[in-house]
Image (cartoon, rainbow, N blue to C red):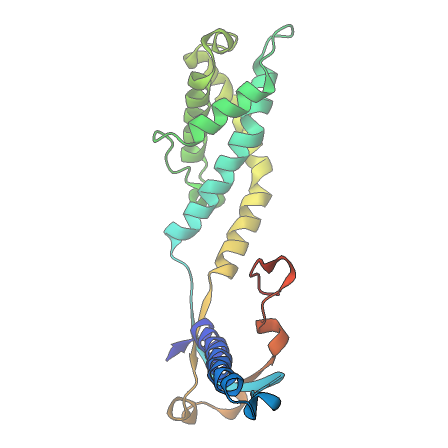
Length: 239
């Protein structure tokens, strides 16, 4: 049994390898033709395949999802980015006294430094999606306190002391978490969909035991232009 993505990748690699092998043979003939006064008058032989069509018959045998820790890691990064770029500056502005302010750049730099710190743990976004927001709330409060610590002392003193700040954050952040819920659900769905792999039967022996109605056909159309390098600027990018 094979993975569908591995099968398709191997097919495309074989096409590229075949094209490269043909070009290598053409280069060898080119040197011979250039060295011979008569052959040099003739075009160099070259296999020129412009289009390839491949039909793959297969049957789905099962799916393999990404482990929960990989999904949790992606969700963790998403919420951390929200805290760093949006939530920390926004909440700090709400907490400041009316005639106090902290430069926006300082807030973003402090949040970025906190995000890189080793003290930031797992927010528990999967548990949050299941209805338990306790860990996500406590870790988010910890992030705010770590970011405050990164501010210049004069600016940090404009905010409440850590005990009062944590208490106020526990009242403010639940609404922020609820606002994040749709984003978390979209991230979860996208992460699981993008990491999903399919086990397939592709050999004759494997397909013999599969009902005909369950056998799928996938046709790949490949144009050689898709495998050529873009010469503009000689940047080596595949177009």
